[in-house]
Image 1: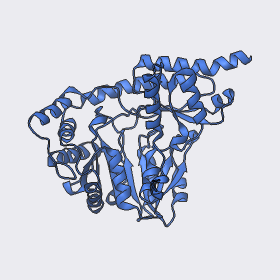
Image 2: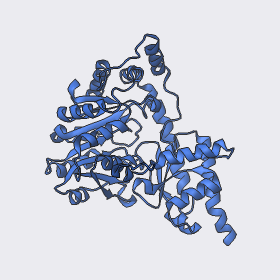
Image 3: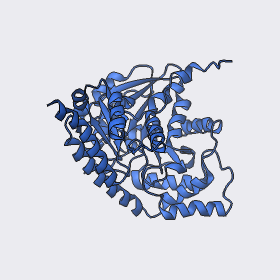
Length: 400
């Protein structure tokens, strides 16, 4: 018998980043020499003192259910982090811990959006935002900001995108995939627009806050716009900064009523995040932060190397980022040189001809681009850039 799938799930596409990672893994298993630059996770091990806290939790029997919205000790660590680093004051009723910030974002959509409600998504965007809105029967509204404006939307663009059905805005800074980060002044300018539309909730995804090297200190959206605190959900997690992707801990601070609704959604899906991971995350947030600074230093070095290397390749241009471990390059010229119809064909060409796996920009709402993750060794990045340059320039040499 044929299974009749819901219309809701048929609107959604698989994550292109996960698809690229799986394809690269399959080719490697078949014995192919593949350099995978698709996955968005640090190549560092979780710092020892954090991992030890997880092991200790297991040995001491901290292996049972917790409250759906997180342990008291982790909530208190999150409250302390928000106050210490962002100047934001929350109480426990305003905090929820989830199985990764991806679940936090999904909970926001499920708790907030009704059929037909619009979710504004600046593009280039993290691949999951539009599909999460669709799964909640919302309507994603993409607002594109190209390289000429630093991949950051303007207040005028935001104002033009707002309709009476607009209910949610996702803002990701520093950005996956571009590495772009909004300055305090830019956040305030966007906030001035949003202040005129009291029905819109702002989901500020700040997952890459600590992988950051811009001259101006990082500013949280709610920190820049205290007048919008009551309708801002500040989203973060331990996955990227502490190399804890597999531990699956995300969290947010936000309006009490919305956080309670998110807890209800979570209570009927995953329930609590892993008890063991919550104990380790508590130690991460409360502990010595020098490990974060050391990893950030390595990411900045890799960023500089990759951006310079990409800009030396004919047909590719790449703006420097302010943070994250991604380089987002415009490959329109290279596509033309190779006679390839789109960025999907370009990514396939690099995979087959160069053995380098990248993610096509169209998956992020930015055709003619590619995203490279530089969460790997400099040696591997050097090899990857040499391979890419070779397969782009070789056909041109032959034609000449």
